[in-house]
Image (tube, rainbow over all chains, first blue to last red; front, side, top):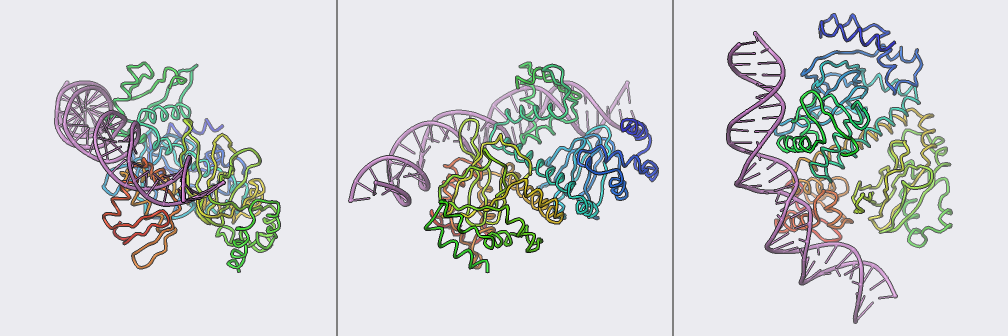
Length: 250
Length: 250
DNA sequence: AGCAAAATGTCGGCTAATTTACACTTCGCT
DNA sequence: AGCGAAGTGTAAATTAGCCGACATTTTGCT
């Protein structure tokens, strides 16, 4: 059911992006399924989701596009339904730092339900095309008030997110660049890789510079390490795909 | 009102610790005020807190004591009412790493409401004496279900915690050891310092090794930097107290 | 097809900070 | 009061990995 919808939608995206015509595709049912599919909203009944749908909007974007979200108007919570984006913050000195990589099914934006607009962040689309749902934070908060079970799920979700953040940072700090790269590849493979025995293939939508930023090292070091891994037959790397020969060897 | 309770309690702690006699002090009213004082529980009515009190227990401990909490039995959430503790994790290689410094009023333990007992963590008491409240995670979850407002507050609380974690880690990664130390001292001063004009006095319950671990550097480097600051008249340091001469100069 | 821009590859010099090693000081305890 | 342990001070050797400075390759675009 969902699959059909996504396929239809996908086909259309190629033709039309970001015109008022977009609105045509925002019929209730489609929105219903987009939310229904997310594990956070599985506890809600059809009517409850319908209710949430009223406050839902969604957006499509193509590779390389930049989406400002922390800025300006009313605070929102976003749900990435398809594709990959990176959250980038502008440093005081003007240089980019990757704050987060958001994958299909992830929520992002002001997850804390707390408005604070001092951070200058934006999202950049990494994959070929993305679909993003959004709803007003205040409306979402209302929904949580009326659905305590959802509130608990959401709390657990935020908690889980925190645990991940802590873990990855702990890695960054105590391990050296090589270990960090290995760990990153393992995580990435686990989350998105297609496994075949002990061989894992990952669709590579990141540049070496992106990878370097994620594991907090210089581009040059990342390049060196990746090449070293390739000569050691641990991975085979190109711009489209990374194949980990034996995930257990990492 | 609260103050009186705390004073009474404090006086007794010195005499008796960790005997069954402890139970004598766990009368409802005391527990009520301990919880009432926490901002998270301010939204609850007296009767609601009374209800939570049934599931509350509390514990006292003295400096240097080690409290295991992630281990063994039923998952709990803890609230530090008085004093300071550090959360320490044992690395694979057997060496300690400080995960967190918990201060008066902070919650700790499995904040994610999710049980995962694989992590080997314990708490070590830093200040002269501490008072810790705890309740069963499952009971707390029930309470959240019945009080959506509390659930939202709690989510915001966890979110705020995450934001702090992210910020401090961002510092650790992008700045050098000196900047990290300065930032740490600023934060510490803000949270616990006693300000007098631009001079701030902090009660120093940390060893230089602790500080080193927090700002993720070696003990030697931390020592050097602290001494350098002292010769530069930025701070005056001893084992009991740190005085920042001019907080605006850091 | 052809050009500019982005991404990747490679090389030393440089520096902050870890490591190792040891002396000294303070604390807690009997 | 006196001993061992914990905490602090200092200095030299070593190193991971950042940075600048290129060359080369690949991509996207018209």
